[in-house]
Image (cartoon, rainbow, N blue to C red; front, side):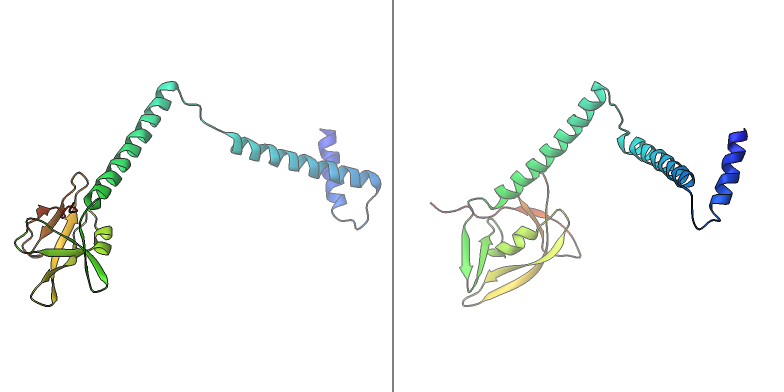
Length: 170
């Protein structure tokens, strides 16, 4: 106990001085070093804490990651298959895909197909009259599980019907 009171007395008297003896300097450096080590050890303990997982937990995490990877891979494959080996048409400076089995020959810009998602969006479809290209605004979306593109002609009375793009001619 006497050492604690001597340390406190010394410490309070040391803080008021401008010059220090070699013993006081050593004492100050030892105290600062001790505080630094305590903080350093606490930081290392925080940084190196890792949870140990059991084999079952590891397998469960790996299984979930694998399922997620497979779903993303399947989505990408379906997205690519929508436009793989499809007939392209060029009108002016723009390139289009043509829908098959529609009431009229409708075309969609290739750039617009890239933007399609499962969320419905209003996108223009183009159709040809005698010498010009007209456009019609329709509601379009895709589904994750399908290669078809779903179109609703009326954005107010929504009824989606699936269409696919025209295949490349051989």
